[in-house]
Length: 240
Image 1 (cartoon, rainbow, N blue to C red):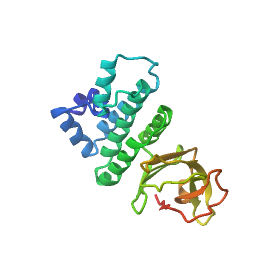
Image 2: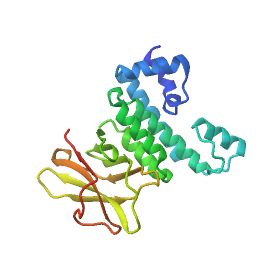
Image 3: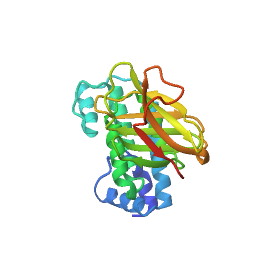
Image 4: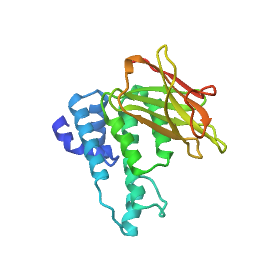
């Protein structure tokens, strides 16, 4: 199939609904880094994001709700309509992570699984989706102890997706740090983890990638710290 024939199929592809020969053709085009098809996929992801973000609140029938949840592999009938929309968004993120670059398959698959298990509101899911959809976003993985990925975008900021984080007792929280080359760590926000140990955190805003040396996470008192007070449980060198 030609790029033109595939163009209108990428919205279904981005939601994981494209099947058969069309899906195989789309995989083949994206696998060989076809610039036309990559552009079509990015456009489809953007369209799907806008549709999800602008969908009005509604109370669907129980039959329709079950069909939508079944489409994204969820059978819990107690989920709300907003949760179903978030699940569709999360599925699109997972597909983006799994197919963007095949040589990073294992690391991105781990990030995909983590994001699918993190509980968060729809706006946070959409923010993560937009962050990942930007072509200038760069990624580096980490595997020892906690595992996951750090994503850096000079305009959008820094996002971390992590799994296998330790369970914290009351009064403690995770804090992310940006460590400049040859400089002192700078606080980059507080976050918590799900009971499963999965979490993701975004620091929004411009980042000087050229001067950034590492991204780290420590366990701090729940009010946060101005400088790290413990040994980092995650320390990811960043060099692009």
